[in-house]
Length: 297
Image (cartoon, rainbow, N blue to C red; front, top):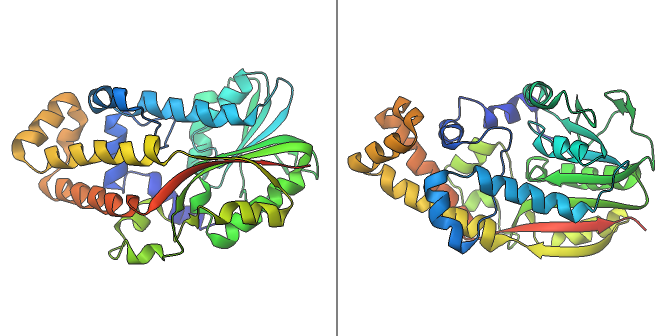
């Protein structure tokens, strides 16, 4: 996986986009969100949090995890999905390469008896984490929501191999990730690096390649779901509305009335946010968002 210090800056105050997202409501979750068409006006006014929760619920539902099962939540971030698993009766271990994220996960969800958290690299797991052995065939489920694009090409291969090693026969990996439609290098779509620097990644895996990589690791593909429209396309519509409003003085004032924390942005930062959002929109036209269910026979 990429350098933890470099990756940490994608979710810190030095990223103006992430500061804006925090003002819009991002907290224990940091995914894009799952939007239905009728709820887009609500999302424009309420912010992304209800839709981020919906995406987390849909991702976790694919796990089909049962009470008592041991589940690894890889790239758990601030711990929301790990805590959800713990509350459902699972023995959930959330790992993340960023110490700051694990610190916040423990602060938010440390009282959840079914959830534990540890700093660990999901692409090269230690022998144990948070006193939980990470032995071969010891886990029932592995979950990874919107984190694998950070791992890099070799890191994703390593993560699939580590997940297969960790799972018992009959175990399941649910991997939800941003993917590309083609092998076209992401750099050609993000020539100024605005998106890649914001989120600290180098590339994304082609949509069709993930099942091939999973098969090479030993998995059988149970399901592949294309969530591009409810996740990427509708998020792009909302971001276009935001960028349009942010492009005018009156629009910025209106946004600040709804989300007062945005008043801290100066003119340069507003312009930077608009540029980053538009760069995301350019990449969004050639990317897909997929949920994969991989089973170990």
